Length: 323
Image 1 (cartoon, rainbow, N blue to C red):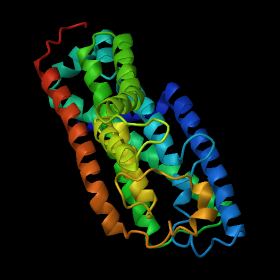
Image 2: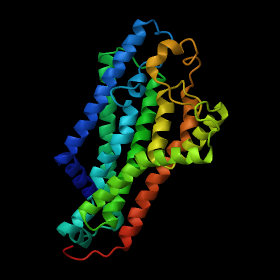
Image 3: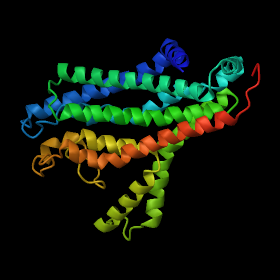
Image 4: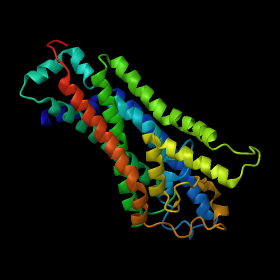
Protein backbone atom coordinates (compact mmCIF):
# COMPACT_ATOMS: atom_id res chain seq x y z
CA UNK A 1 0.00 0.00 0.00
CA UNK A 2 2.92 2.35 0.64
CA UNK A 3 3.99 2.19 -3.00
CA UNK A 4 0.48 3.00 -4.24
CA UNK A 5 0.16 5.79 -1.67
CA UNK A 6 3.43 7.43 -2.66
CA UNK A 7 2.70 7.08 -6.38
CA UNK A 8 -0.76 8.64 -6.06
CA UNK A 9 0.58 11.43 -3.87
CA UNK A 10 3.22 12.27 -6.47
CA UNK A 11 0.60 12.22 -9.22
CA UNK A 12 -1.66 14.63 -7.32
CA UNK A 13 1.02 17.23 -6.71
CA UNK A 14 2.59 16.75 -10.15
CA UNK A 15 -0.58 17.10 -12.24
CA UNK A 16 -1.39 20.30 -14.14
CA UNK A 17 -5.14 20.41 -13.42
CA UNK A 18 -4.75 20.32 -9.65
CA UNK A 19 -2.73 23.56 -9.12
CA UNK A 20 -5.12 25.54 -11.35
CA UNK A 21 -8.24 24.79 -9.32
CA UNK A 22 -6.34 25.07 -6.05
CA UNK A 23 -5.06 28.51 -7.09
CA UNK A 24 -8.61 29.69 -7.81
CA UNK A 25 -9.81 28.58 -4.38
CA UNK A 26 -6.80 30.16 -2.66
CA UNK A 27 -7.33 33.43 -4.54
CA UNK A 28 -11.01 33.63 -3.61
CA UNK A 29 -10.27 32.82 0.04
CA UNK A 30 -7.49 35.40 0.27
CA UNK A 31 -9.67 38.11 -1.27
CA UNK A 32 -12.45 37.27 1.17
CA UNK A 33 -10.03 37.33 4.11
CA UNK A 34 -8.56 40.65 2.95
CA UNK A 35 -11.98 42.29 2.89
CA UNK A 36 -12.83 40.74 6.26
CA UNK A 37 -9.61 42.23 7.62
CA UNK A 38 -10.67 45.65 6.40
CA UNK A 39 -13.96 45.23 8.28
CA UNK A 40 -12.05 44.33 11.44
CA UNK A 41 -9.88 47.43 11.15
CA UNK A 42 -13.00 49.54 10.71
CA UNK A 43 -14.60 48.02 13.83
CA UNK A 44 -11.45 48.60 15.84
CA UNK A 45 -11.37 52.21 14.65
CA UNK A 46 -14.94 52.64 15.89
CA UNK A 47 -13.92 51.60 19.39
CA UNK A 48 -15.18 48.00 19.32
CA UNK A 49 -11.87 46.56 20.50
CA UNK A 50 -13.22 45.51 23.89
CA UNK A 51 -16.30 43.85 22.38
CA UNK A 52 -14.25 42.01 19.75
CA UNK A 53 -11.53 40.90 22.15
CA UNK A 54 -10.82 37.19 21.85
CA UNK A 55 -12.81 36.83 18.61
CA UNK A 56 -11.38 39.32 16.12
CA UNK A 57 -8.90 36.82 14.66
CA UNK A 58 -11.65 34.27 13.99
CA UNK A 59 -13.59 36.87 12.01
CA UNK A 60 -10.96 36.52 9.27
CA UNK A 61 -12.50 33.12 8.58
CA UNK A 62 -16.16 33.82 9.40
CA UNK A 63 -16.82 37.44 8.38
CA UNK A 64 -18.36 37.99 4.93
CA UNK A 65 -15.92 39.07 2.28
CA UNK A 66 -16.37 39.45 -1.47
CA UNK A 67 -18.67 36.43 -1.82
CA UNK A 68 -18.73 34.12 1.19
CA UNK A 69 -16.75 33.78 4.39
CA UNK A 70 -13.64 31.63 4.14
CA UNK A 71 -15.33 28.61 5.69
CA UNK A 72 -18.18 28.80 3.18
CA UNK A 73 -15.69 29.02 0.35
CA UNK A 74 -14.27 25.73 1.58
CA UNK A 75 -17.78 24.36 1.96
CA UNK A 76 -18.84 25.18 -1.61
CA UNK A 77 -15.58 25.16 -3.61
CA UNK A 78 -13.70 22.46 -1.69
CA UNK A 79 -15.83 19.56 -3.05
CA UNK A 80 -14.86 20.17 -6.71
CA UNK A 81 -11.22 19.97 -5.66
CA UNK A 82 -11.82 16.69 -3.83
CA UNK A 83 -13.78 15.34 -6.79
CA UNK A 84 -10.92 16.32 -9.09
CA UNK A 85 -8.59 14.08 -7.11
CA UNK A 86 -10.76 10.97 -7.21
CA UNK A 87 -13.18 10.92 -10.13
CA UNK A 88 -10.75 8.96 -12.38
CA UNK A 89 -8.84 7.02 -9.75
CA UNK A 90 -10.03 3.56 -10.86
CA UNK A 91 -11.57 3.85 -14.32
CA UNK A 92 -8.46 5.61 -15.64
CA UNK A 93 -6.33 2.69 -14.48
CA UNK A 94 -8.86 0.32 -16.02
CA UNK A 95 -8.87 2.19 -19.33
CA UNK A 96 -5.07 2.31 -19.56
CA UNK A 97 -4.80 -1.36 -18.67
CA UNK A 98 -2.62 -0.78 -15.60
CA UNK A 99 -5.22 -1.96 -13.07
CA UNK A 100 -4.87 -5.61 -14.06
CA UNK A 101 -1.08 -5.30 -13.89
CA UNK A 102 -1.28 -3.87 -10.37
CA UNK A 103 -3.60 -6.62 -9.15
CA UNK A 104 -1.39 -9.27 -10.78
CA UNK A 105 1.25 -8.33 -8.21
CA UNK A 106 0.97 -9.37 -4.55
CA UNK A 107 -1.32 -6.41 -3.90
CA UNK A 108 -4.78 -6.73 -2.37
CA UNK A 109 -7.71 -4.75 -3.68
CA UNK A 110 -8.27 -3.06 -0.33
CA UNK A 111 -4.69 -1.77 -0.50
CA UNK A 112 -5.41 -0.18 -3.88
CA UNK A 113 -8.51 1.61 -2.58
CA UNK A 114 -6.90 2.57 0.73
CA UNK A 115 -3.73 3.88 -0.94
CA UNK A 116 -5.62 6.06 -3.40
CA UNK A 117 -8.01 7.37 -0.76
CA UNK A 118 -5.32 8.17 1.82
CA UNK A 119 -3.14 9.91 -0.77
CA UNK A 120 -6.04 12.13 -1.81
CA UNK A 121 -7.02 12.80 1.79
CA UNK A 122 -3.47 13.82 2.75
CA UNK A 123 -3.33 16.13 -0.26
CA UNK A 124 -6.56 17.81 0.78
CA UNK A 125 -5.38 18.09 4.39
CA UNK A 126 -2.13 19.78 3.31
CA UNK A 127 -3.98 22.20 1.03
CA UNK A 128 -6.54 23.10 3.69
CA UNK A 129 -3.81 23.69 6.27
CA UNK A 130 -1.87 25.86 3.82
CA UNK A 131 -5.00 27.87 3.09
CA UNK A 132 -5.68 28.51 6.78
CA UNK A 133 -2.07 29.53 7.38
CA UNK A 134 -2.13 31.94 4.43
CA UNK A 135 -5.35 33.56 5.62
CA UNK A 136 -3.99 33.77 9.17
CA UNK A 137 -0.74 35.33 7.94
CA UNK A 138 -2.63 37.86 5.86
CA UNK A 139 -4.75 38.74 8.86
CA UNK A 140 -1.75 39.21 11.11
CA UNK A 141 -0.02 41.39 8.55
CA UNK A 142 -3.07 43.46 7.62
CA UNK A 143 -5.76 43.63 10.27
CA UNK A 144 -3.41 42.96 13.15
CA UNK A 145 -5.54 40.84 15.55
CA UNK A 146 -3.32 38.27 17.24
CA UNK A 147 -4.91 34.86 17.96
CA UNK A 148 -5.73 34.06 21.56
CA UNK A 149 -5.32 30.79 23.40
CA UNK A 150 -8.95 29.89 22.65
CA UNK A 151 -8.86 30.76 18.95
CA UNK A 152 -5.95 28.52 17.99
CA UNK A 153 -7.66 25.28 19.18
CA UNK A 154 -10.83 26.38 17.41
CA UNK A 155 -8.91 26.68 14.15
CA UNK A 156 -7.36 23.25 14.72
CA UNK A 157 -10.80 21.69 15.22
CA UNK A 158 -12.06 23.57 12.19
CA UNK A 159 -9.22 22.11 10.13
CA UNK A 160 -10.10 18.57 11.25
CA UNK A 161 -13.74 19.26 10.43
CA UNK A 162 -12.77 20.44 6.95
CA UNK A 163 -10.65 17.34 6.30
CA UNK A 164 -13.51 15.06 7.37
CA UNK A 165 -15.89 17.00 5.13
CA UNK A 166 -13.63 16.86 2.08
CA UNK A 167 -13.00 13.18 2.78
CA UNK A 168 -16.67 12.51 2.07
CA UNK A 169 -16.43 14.11 -1.38
CA UNK A 170 -13.21 12.27 -2.12
CA UNK A 171 -14.86 8.98 -1.18
CA UNK A 172 -17.88 9.83 -3.32
CA UNK A 173 -15.67 10.58 -6.34
CA UNK A 174 -13.77 7.33 -5.76
CA UNK A 175 -17.06 5.45 -5.62
CA UNK A 176 -18.19 7.00 -8.90
CA UNK A 177 -14.90 6.05 -10.55
CA UNK A 178 -15.61 2.44 -9.60
CA UNK A 179 -19.25 2.44 -10.67
CA UNK A 180 -18.72 4.27 -13.99
CA UNK A 181 -16.64 2.70 -16.72
CA UNK A 182 -15.69 6.00 -18.39
CA UNK A 183 -13.95 9.02 -16.91
CA UNK A 184 -16.53 11.42 -18.32
CA UNK A 185 -19.43 9.56 -16.74
CA UNK A 186 -17.79 9.54 -13.31
CA UNK A 187 -16.97 13.26 -13.57
CA UNK A 188 -20.55 14.13 -14.55
CA UNK A 189 -22.00 11.94 -11.82
CA UNK A 190 -19.77 13.44 -9.14
CA UNK A 191 -20.45 16.98 -10.36
CA UNK A 192 -24.20 16.36 -10.42
CA UNK A 193 -24.06 15.05 -6.85
CA UNK A 194 -22.18 18.19 -5.77
CA UNK A 195 -24.68 20.52 -7.43
CA UNK A 196 -27.63 18.67 -5.95
CA UNK A 197 -26.28 18.48 -2.39
CA UNK A 198 -24.79 21.99 -2.38
CA UNK A 199 -27.68 23.97 -3.84
CA UNK A 200 -30.81 22.01 -4.68
CA UNK A 201 -31.23 20.36 -1.27
CA UNK A 202 -31.43 23.77 0.38
CA UNK A 203 -33.96 25.00 -2.17
CA UNK A 204 -36.04 21.85 -1.77
CA UNK A 205 -35.89 22.13 2.02
CA UNK A 206 -37.11 25.73 1.88
CA UNK A 207 -39.96 24.78 -0.44
CA UNK A 208 -40.95 21.84 1.73
CA UNK A 209 -40.87 24.06 4.83
CA UNK A 210 -43.23 26.56 3.22
CA UNK A 211 -45.58 23.72 2.30
CA UNK A 212 -45.46 22.01 5.70
CA UNK A 213 -45.59 25.20 7.78
CA UNK A 214 -47.50 27.84 5.78
CA UNK A 215 -47.91 31.34 7.16
CA UNK A 216 -51.37 32.84 7.59
CA UNK A 217 -50.34 36.32 6.40
CA UNK A 218 -47.35 36.45 4.02
CA UNK A 219 -47.02 40.22 4.47
CA UNK A 220 -46.99 40.06 8.28
CA UNK A 221 -46.09 36.51 9.30
CA UNK A 222 -46.24 35.60 12.96
CA UNK A 223 -42.94 34.94 14.73
CA UNK A 224 -44.00 31.40 15.68
CA UNK A 225 -44.86 30.56 12.09
CA UNK A 226 -41.54 31.88 10.80
CA UNK A 227 -39.62 29.96 13.48
CA UNK A 228 -41.49 26.74 12.71
CA UNK A 229 -40.63 27.07 9.03
CA UNK A 230 -36.97 27.72 9.82
CA UNK A 231 -36.79 24.65 12.05
CA UNK A 232 -38.26 22.42 9.34
CA UNK A 233 -36.01 23.91 6.64
CA UNK A 234 -32.92 23.42 8.79
CA UNK A 235 -33.72 19.83 9.65
CA UNK A 236 -34.43 18.92 6.04
CA UNK A 237 -31.37 20.83 4.87
CA UNK A 238 -29.10 18.75 7.09
CA UNK A 239 -29.57 15.93 4.60
CA UNK A 240 -26.78 17.70 2.70
CA UNK A 241 -23.22 17.47 4.08
CA UNK A 242 -22.64 21.00 2.79
CA UNK A 243 -25.19 22.42 5.22
CA UNK A 244 -23.87 20.23 8.03
CA UNK A 245 -20.34 21.51 7.47
CA UNK A 246 -21.34 25.17 7.16
CA UNK A 247 -23.40 25.05 10.34
CA UNK A 248 -20.67 23.33 12.34
CA UNK A 249 -17.99 25.71 11.03
CA UNK A 250 -20.19 28.67 11.96
CA UNK A 251 -20.39 27.47 15.55
CA UNK A 252 -16.64 26.90 15.79
CA UNK A 253 -15.59 30.21 14.25
CA UNK A 254 -18.26 32.39 15.88
CA UNK A 255 -18.31 31.81 19.66
CA UNK A 256 -21.26 34.19 20.02
CA UNK A 257 -23.53 31.73 18.24
CA UNK A 258 -25.34 29.53 20.72
CA UNK A 259 -28.71 28.73 19.12
CA UNK A 260 -29.16 26.06 16.46
CA UNK A 261 -32.09 27.94 14.95
CA UNK A 262 -30.57 31.42 15.10
CA UNK A 263 -30.21 33.23 11.77
CA UNK A 264 -26.65 34.23 10.82
CA UNK A 265 -26.32 38.00 11.25
CA UNK A 266 -23.96 39.96 9.11
CA UNK A 267 -20.88 40.88 11.07
CA UNK A 268 -20.61 44.32 9.50
CA UNK A 269 -23.44 45.35 11.86
CA UNK A 270 -21.19 45.03 14.88
CA UNK A 271 -21.51 48.71 15.71
CA UNK A 272 -25.24 48.31 16.35
CA UNK A 273 -24.93 44.87 17.92
CA UNK A 274 -22.88 46.33 20.77
CA UNK A 275 -26.15 47.68 22.16
CA UNK A 276 -27.99 44.36 21.80
CA UNK A 277 -25.32 42.33 23.56
CA UNK A 278 -24.49 39.99 20.66
CA UNK A 279 -20.87 39.74 21.79
CA UNK A 280 -21.72 39.27 25.46
CA UNK A 281 -20.86 35.93 26.98
CA UNK A 282 -19.33 33.95 24.08
CA UNK A 283 -19.22 30.19 24.39
CA UNK A 284 -16.06 28.47 25.50
CA UNK A 285 -14.46 25.88 23.23
CA UNK A 286 -15.82 22.82 25.14
CA UNK A 287 -19.33 24.25 24.85
CA UNK A 288 -18.93 24.83 21.12
CA UNK A 289 -17.59 21.28 20.74
CA UNK A 290 -20.81 19.96 22.28
CA UNK A 291 -22.75 21.72 19.53
CA UNK A 292 -20.56 20.48 16.65
CA UNK A 293 -19.95 16.90 17.81
CA UNK A 294 -23.08 15.54 16.03
CA UNK A 295 -22.05 17.35 12.85
CA UNK A 296 -18.51 15.94 12.98
CA UNK A 297 -19.82 12.45 13.72
CA UNK A 298 -22.18 12.66 10.75
CA UNK A 299 -19.42 13.74 8.37
CA UNK A 300 -17.15 10.94 9.57
CA UNK A 301 -19.94 8.39 9.12
CA UNK A 302 -20.66 9.59 5.59
CA UNK A 303 -16.95 9.48 4.72
CA UNK A 304 -16.58 5.98 6.12
CA UNK A 305 -19.72 4.84 4.28
CA UNK A 306 -18.49 6.02 0.87
CA UNK A 307 -15.09 4.39 1.47
CA UNK A 308 -16.71 1.11 2.58
CA UNK A 309 -19.02 1.05 -0.45
CA UNK A 310 -16.05 1.71 -2.73
CA UNK A 311 -14.13 -1.22 -1.28
CA UNK A 312 -17.15 -3.53 -1.28
CA UNK A 313 -18.08 -2.86 -4.93
CA UNK A 314 -14.49 -2.89 -6.17
CA UNK A 315 -13.83 -6.22 -4.47
CA UNK A 316 -16.68 -7.84 -6.42
CA UNK A 317 -15.88 -6.32 -9.80
CA UNK A 318 -14.15 -8.35 -12.46
CA UNK A 319 -10.84 -6.96 -13.66
CA UNK A 320 -9.69 -8.30 -17.00
CA UNK A 321 -6.28 -8.02 -18.58
CA UNK A 322 -6.01 -4.97 -20.79
CA UNK A 323 -9.09 -3.13 -19.46
